[in-house]
Length: 168
Image 1 (cartoon, rainbow, N blue to C red):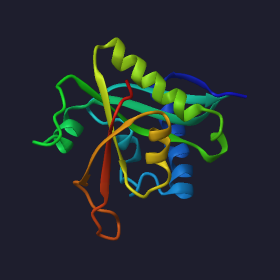
Image 2 (cartoon, rainbow, N blue to C red):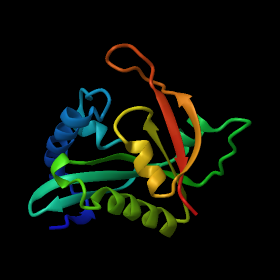
Image 3 (cartoon, rainbow, N blue to C red):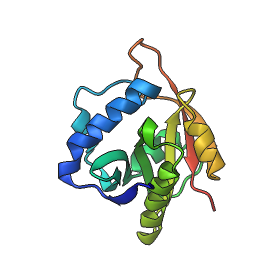
Image 4 (cartoon, rainbow, N blue to C red):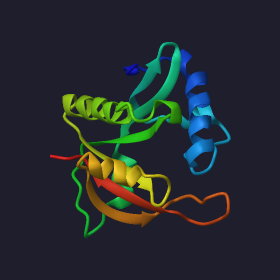
């Protein structure tokens, strides 16, 4: 069965945290487990949020956020990005739901909403963690640049972030 994509509700958050825990244990995403997992999924700059549900089970989720922070992180004299950007964030799909096109559908939902709002879309992924870069590149996302993250991994290393722009 193909999971249903719908707007996230407040009551979905405990199940989102459970699903994110499965992803973290399988893939190491998020790269460091947050002290406040619910807060990690509800940052103050969220424009909208969706979940993928299979019956009653949340099997994935994604956020559309204000893109100002990510734009500021990667823009410089070599990377010129316009204002009016949103960012895709906190995308994950549980291992059991992979291979169903769920992640691509969640991303497509974000892009469609951003376009409806007149916004372009950017995103960042941690280099070398899972196949996130390959996933977005297969969807046609355009690589922009890499930058050191503004945070550290549990071992103290500063990861490299890869930034992408929406296709088209």
